[in-house]
Length: 105
Figure 1 (cartoon, helix red, strand yellow):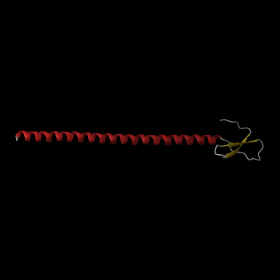
Figure 2 (figure 1 turned 90 degrees about the vertical axis):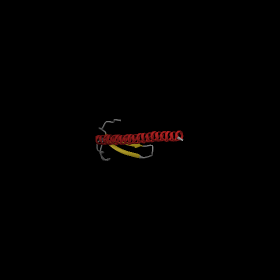
Figure 3 (figure 1 turned 135 degrees about the vertical axis):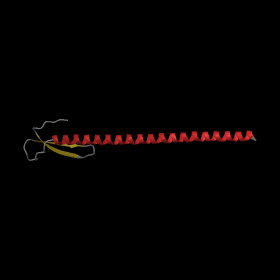
Figure 4 (figure 1 turned 180 degrees about the horizontal axis):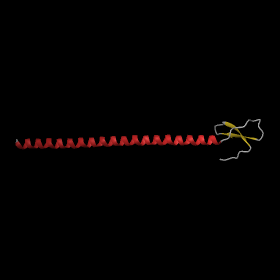
C-alpha cells in the first residue's frame, strides 16, 4: 500500500510540475504575442506618420511649384502663348503664358 501511495504522490507531483511548466509556457507565449502586437502597432503608427509627412512634403512641393507659375494673361493680350495639356483620361487643360516665360520641365 505504501508503494501505491508513494507512486500516486509522485504522479501528482509530476502532473503538477507539468501543469506549471505548461502554464509558464502559455504565459510566455501570451507575453510574446502582446509584445509582437505592440511592435505591429508601433510600426503601423510610424508608417502612418511617415505617410503623413510624405503627403505634407508633396503638398508643399505642389504649392511651391504652383506659386512659381506666373499669372495667366488675358486671351486678348498681345504676346501670349497658349498650351494645351491632354491627359490619358481625355481631360484637356488650356493654359496661357506670356511669350517671355521660359519653359521648364
